[in-house]
Image (tube, rainbow, N blue to C red; front, side):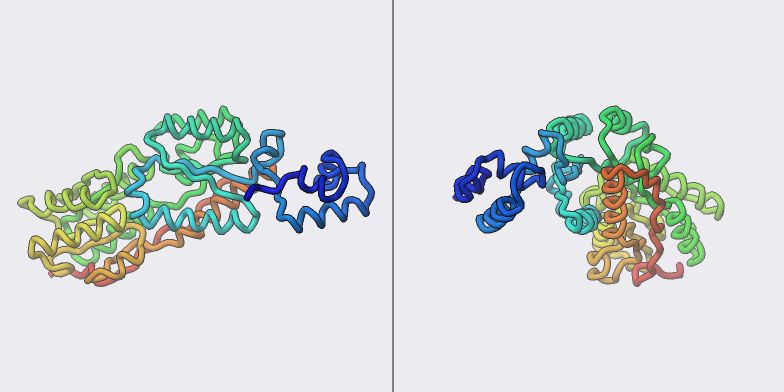
Length: 337
């Protein structure tokens, strides 16, 4: 089996390949009767345009790119990116656009992928995620002239269009809630320290704890994996002044932290309250179910895709501040006894 070609259509219709090209592209040069016959034959044999070849000739690729600087083994375990991609895909598929996804080792490899995709006409635009402080990808993407949407805070997005949520407000809401439950020693098991959203959450956490007069608040940075989350939890719970509440930067680490607390014979929530960032089904199936910061992640991805498609169409959609994650209390948090 092979892909049907223009030559196959020309042979069936008894015309030249040039006439087929005119008919398929809606150009003058063939009669309406011939055009109708060619289109009918193309549909009959299942011919579809070669998007890659058209892109090399300056036509749209009808695809956008997303390169993720994450280990492939952890990507499949993290619900956030799977839900984000599902939202992006839903919006793209409605417009018959494809998503090119590639996992890369570092930012240098990521930009090499984008330069190649853009230079070869494989994509019409791209997403940037996991913004770093003074991220070199932003000026490089700007210099490419490629339509791009940053899924991250506008403070580090340069001239690129950002889609973001107010993480700082969500952190403050959580600290206020834990403080109202009587917790005075609250700790945070965070993600990578060089990420912009991590620095925003760190600052909001410290400011909220200071405002409430809480002492002993600590932040430990990890790589988002369950192993690192468990290690950080053991370190915190083994300290002389162990925390009575811990916030985690993702659901994987929160579930790992819950397991460590139970391993150390601590009761959740009477001895330790736990809050997970980005609520997920994983947070709801463990016992006790975890209090989480809930948001519509697929909608977040869809909004980013809408902005990127608008850019590709030549519009200026502007930045979008999406809905901030909201606290959903469950069985893992309780008043301090």
